[in-house]
Each structure stands twice: as C-alpha cells, then as structure tokens.
Image (cartoon, rainbow, N blue to C red; front, side, top):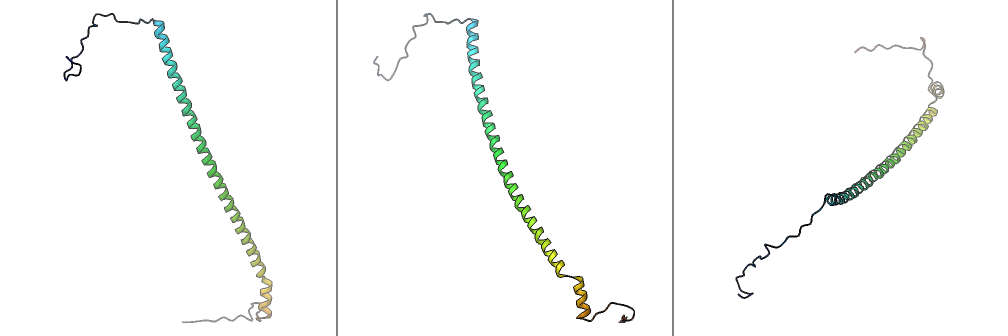
Length: 133
C-alpha cells in the first residue's frame, strides 16, 4: 500500500521479546532520593515562611505608621481645643473682673442717696398699703 492512502495500517509491534532495562535501586539510594526531595520541600517551606513573615511585618508596620499618624492628628486637635478653652477662660475672667469693677456698691449707694434722694428704711419713713380687689 501507498503511504498517502486514505486507510492507514497500524504498525505491528515486533518488540515483545526484547529485554527491558530495569534499574535496581538500593535502600541507601532511595533514602538519598527521599532526603533530596525533603530538602527541596524544606527549602520551599522556609522560603514561603520567610515571605509570609516579611509580609506580616510590613503590614504591621503600615498599621503602626497609620496609628501613629492618627495619634498625632488627635494630639494636634486636642492641643487646639485646649488652647481655645484657655482663651475662653481668660476672656471670661477678664469680662468678669470688668463687670465687678463697673458695679461698685458704694457708688450705687452714693448715687441713690445723693442724686435720687433715697434714705435707709425705718419705722418713720415706711408706708404700708393695703390693696383689696
């Protein structure tokens, strides 16, 4: 038959009686191979653990920096409010002393007696009024 024909014939396997190559490994060789495989796995595990540790430190550092920033902002706001509070207290005290200086009891008493003609109360100058409805 031709090679390019529509029907192809499967090749026949004539190698049924051949000798197969077998590699026999000793127990020591298997242990060495197993140790090599375990070393590779151990290296991978250590690498992955190192990467995970590094990432966790980076994330904790980022959180720490963010917390420090918020703390500083809160401190600044506290200091501002504290200074405003002190300013308001000083203003209140200043106004209070100004009010106390403007209201002088002796000055009011002098004005009432001299300018308005008022006198102290006693039985001679007291009048009682009875109002019935």
